[in-house]
Amino acid sequence: MNNYISIVNRYEFAQFYRFGYIYISASELLPFTEIGSTETKSNLVSHFKSKTPFEYDEEYLIIHLCLEMENQNTIRKFLITDLKSIYPLSRQAKQLIQERMDSRIKLEEPIFESLIPAIISNIQNKEIEMSISALWTIFDLDSSSDLIKHKIGVENIYKGIEFRKEGVKSFQMTNVNIWSILIAYDRYEYFPNSTLGYFFDSGQVFAYSKQSNFENSKLYTLLKSIKEDSKTPIIISKLENSELSQSYILNTTFDGLKFHIVAPLYLMLKDDLRTSEDLKQSKYFTKTSLEYLKSFGDEFKAAVILLGSFFGYKKVYDLYYDKLNLSFFNNYKPFVVIENNMQTEIIEVQKEKEEVPIPEVEINKEIITNAIIETAEIKPVAPNETNEVVETVIMEFQKEEILETEDKAAIQYPTKEISVADESLIIGQEFKMESFILEILKQQNEISLTDLANKIKIAKGDKKKKTNSELEKEIIKTETLEVTKTKTKMVIRKTGFDFKKT
Image (cartoon, rainbow, N blue to C red; front, top):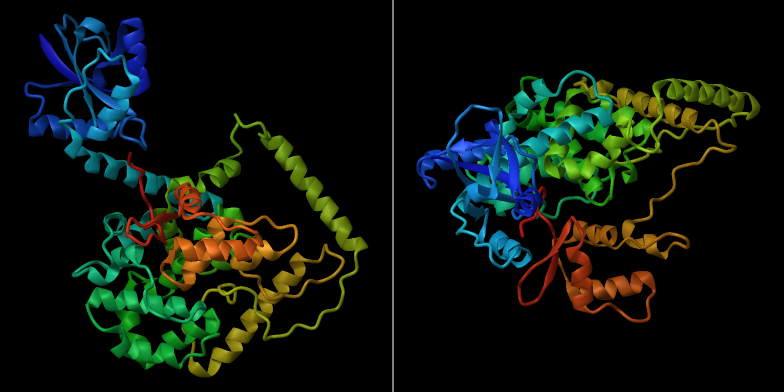
């Protein structure tokens, strides 16, 4: 008799039990002589790589089958009498599955539980690849991501994600690659709450990688000398033209990839997307903003790779599927229809431009839109040319904004942004608790449930505040927040990309 183990979905097993037989491909059968051997376990991890990924460990069972094979058919039929043992993946899975199964069925001890981290790691790494690929399509980026991933090192990305999952802080790391530290990084210092703050963050990451004190560095001195409300082009120009930052730039340029630009871009976009339920809600997800971001070339592409790695596929797949125009969607449009619609839109826009006069607008060179949207691709320039270059770029970008609003009756000037925390006070806007809390956590690392309940009561104008228990139940349902198990329960951000475990 030959002994095999096979990985089956729990629902597939239920059908096997109901009908008394199952067909399994020969490639999905793993022969063994000793079920608990190192070789068997190693082969099992490899077999999981070809299975549909899972989120909860009760979704799969490992079954032991015994049958004398008379032929080598690619598809083999097993009867319920050929089933010898059933192994859950973990103790928790065993408990959950046992509650739902026929009470006569015995589940074995989860002898493969130690393999779960390796299995999950393989799924996670594949999810990162899928997320990066999806963002590449969403942003209409040209060329392949492979070259830039090679410059960063995918193993460094995976390591950074592992640090986040394990709760290892950036300042606790020694002899760790700078990209791993960047992925795991969270701000704990009181850096400026502006664009400049992200450049401080990037310098701090560099200091961690060198195990040195950032506040005693020349780079810190330079950044402190820059005005707090300075915009990206001015900051980058000062970095690239100061003697104080040359060591930093030299040590963080990898085959032409500029960490001193990649890191602030990534951190800015990450903070914005953290408070958005999907990419469309991001203030950077407009045609003009995206075209501007693309002007950073490989540096923006590298930031996209890091974003995809941090958030995973779950954050981006909705928009990705819309972009793909999937044929099985209700709103699917054949290519011919899309072409016709594009032609119609072009004609109508042209008519609008002919009918609506463009008001004359005096451009104020000091008006700049978002924190990041300030300039085209930054290249080192001589100090005496800096102001001229920056002003030219700002003027060009403002011209693009004006052209984009030509189809409106009047030009809308930039107004002061309303913070997420104040959104609920605006008539007609829905209060978004998750965004509200994340905005608070930008200013402080944690907040007690009691204090948070008070803030929500004030923001919503409620007569009665939520109880801590009610509030905790709502927070648990979010993807970005969690409540600590300390005596005084605190609300904190979840630590990046994570797989739920039951």
